[in-house]
Length: 174
Image (tube, rainbow, N blue to C red; front, side):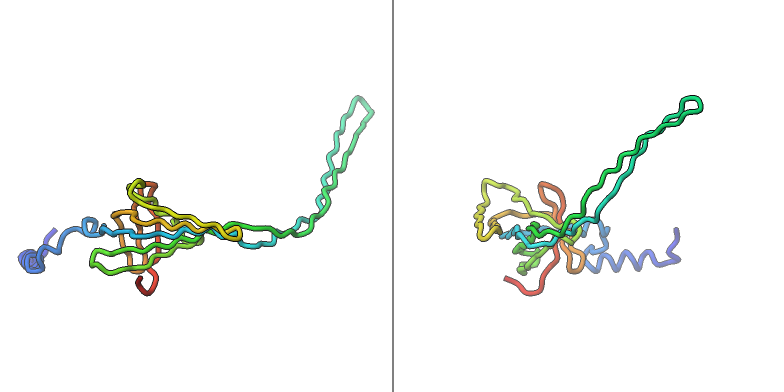
């Protein structure tokens, strides 16, 4: 490949920018500190739909010579009414310190792809406190540690001991 005389210009530009012309893959990962996480299990009321009546007929037939015989059985499963119950919903929040020292609120909800719990890097150094009220449980964990992460605009992918999780960077700081 030829740059038609641009190679010296590109190299000079990279040197003047302090070597910022490294590959994008090397620059993608950052180091963030997760100071605190709040994980909630909320039991939400939900209506589960009923089912219509279902009829199933099964016939056994046989023929011997000129004689045919058969036996049919019909099973009816009655309709069911809608019911109400509780369904769990999971919410996760975190307080993070970004590489520039700024504080960020992170959130993820069940409908976000890759949403999940941030596991502590050294569980023996972190502290968790869980409280249950009215069927809901909230757990707050502090001192989780420093994690590798990738930031893409308002999203932060954090690499945890249990795999990567995706959080949205919320407005405001703590």
